[in-house]
Amino acid sequence: MDIQSERRRLLDAEGEHEDPTGLMSEQDAYLSKVKNRKLYLATFASVLGPMSFGFVLGYSSPAIPELTAIADPRLKLDDVQASWFGSIVTVGAAAGGLLGGWMVEKIGRKLSLMFCSLPFVFGFTIIIAAQNVWMLYIGRVLTGLASGVTSLVVPLYISEMAHEQVRGTLGSCVQLMVVLGIMGVYLAGLFLDWRWLAICSSIPPTLLMVCMCFMPETPRFLLSQGKRREAEEALRFLRGPDAPVEWECARIEDACDEQGSSFQMSDLKDPGVYKPLMIGIMLMIFQQMTGINAIMFYAENIFEQAHFKESDLASVIVGLIQVVFTAVAAVIMDKAGRKILLIISGVAMAISTTAFGVYFYLMSKLHSSTPPSEEPNTDLAWLALASMAVFISGFALGWGPIPWLVMSEVFPLKVRGFASAVCVLTNWSMAFLVTKTFQDMMNVLTSAGTFWLFACMCILNVIFTMVFLPETKGKTLEQIEATFRGTSGP
Image (cartoon, rainbow, N blue to C red; front, top):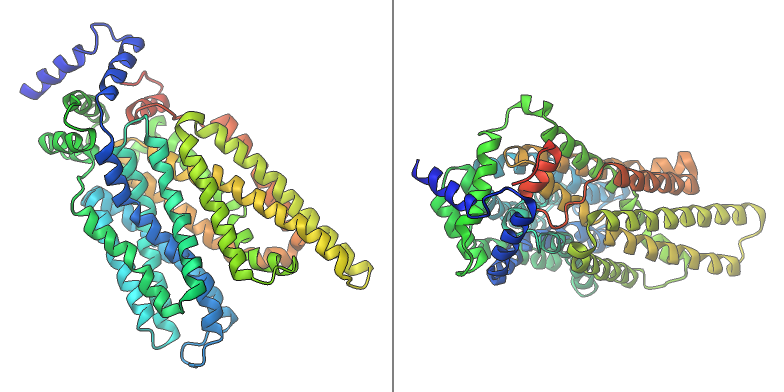
């Protein structure tokens, strides 16, 4: 009963009455004593994971042209094999999502992160030592598996460590590091061959494992395991020596007690569980149905049609646009809020995919009516380039980082592993479906029709955001949870 009475005393110290203004001033008083230096350090260590995952996603772009032209017949890829080399990562990542959901609950967030650096390194080692196409595939599946685990664990780790004033910015660093990794591998691909590129790609996961040794487990996971003393130590590390961490500890513990112990399937009937789960799943479906993978897939062709000779340099430019706008999103996330950025992002993508459709439609009309002439093609190519720039910057501003951020914020503690696994599995399965069926969609619906379908999806995702998504800016994870349960938050 000792801890119980201490918690009551600490919570009573917030103010005799449970009035929200008193709570807010208490919260602000607490946050004013917090030092963020070590929190930033822990975030930097954990986002080496998403950077590794960016290297995996970007690796196929410079590697495939080399592997299709390689002299060694055992390693030479034909078109079908090249397509699998690119997309098999998503199969590994879908499995990694399920594995990650189980791991975060069983061994915790920190150890899951450390373990996922192993398949990254093993996968790239198998690619470096590859003697045949199957070794290349196995290497890609392993790095994909690690990417799936990372895409689940890192957002969780950051959201459970960070406090509400900086959670949006730090959570957006996940996507920022993914696009930095993609750009890094594109840049390195200009100078290195595919084997050296794989050696370079295994540096971030190695650093991840080393750095995470010195970082704490998340306080929320420790409290859910009943380890209060360790949780207070972790909070003291993250919040600095001056913050009265017992207050935050008591607040998290109260929410844990209210929830009960572990997740059962019957919990899915609870609106505090099924509402955020449906929102998480829909965000992941919409993220892939915006056509981001299709546009990235098509990027080089578009640049070629625009008579942009250096198509690999063009990829670096695309990467740069992504990095800049994801960084902008990270900076303004906690000021603007999640909802408004998703709406702006969705509108920008709807306009640009519609313009893409118009471009393809006019191109097909030109081809059918007149003998191919240079001039109109060049004029229209600028429409494609402009659409692409607007699309990529729009995606990076909202629908790139925010679904992952919201996924890490909305789930109650006891279902966080299960629900995040369902979301990650949905995301990667949709990525696989869209990438694999894209060519068939182009054949059936024509290029213009396919992009107009993506435009309709972007309009739908704007409506979905406006109607169903609650704003999570500036709220503690416990307050967000209470919003879905329909009670007032702690």
